[in-house]
Amino acid sequence: MISFRPISVNDLEEKTLLELAKMNLLYADKSQDDSIPSDRLFQATEAFLKDSKVPWAIWILWDDDKPIGYAVTELIKGVQGPEMNITQAYIGEGYRGNGVQALTIREFEKYAKERGCAFLTSMTRRGNPDAYIRWMGRVGFNKRVVIVEKDLRGD
Image (cartoon, rainbow, N blue to C red; front, side, top):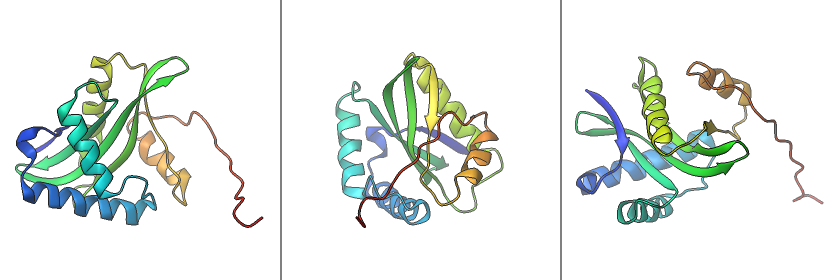
């Protein structure tokens, strides 16, 4: 049975942590986002488990007792009230589709509402943002902002 929830102390088995590190590497490779490497992910997990007031949460997607995905969310101050941002999310091969994305979003929404959030947000820097917008649009997300950038490294 597929389930999705914030990580708990009971999840801290070596095999679970190894799978989390492996999924983190797969996420970084696929998304080209290495902003939270495994060592920082483990530090964030430790802080989350020690202090319920930290603004982030580490999530595990389970197929019975096998970790098949993970996510990192952060509570942030938005213009129209608190928001929960999906900072990273990875769903393992073979589990994408079949309602798994919708399950994760429902759990995110429930968690965010319990914390008084007005919005659930996510962004991407991947090469094809239109595909990401379509993918997230399937579960109710709308494009809110456009960010442009200028690369200054070559000047």
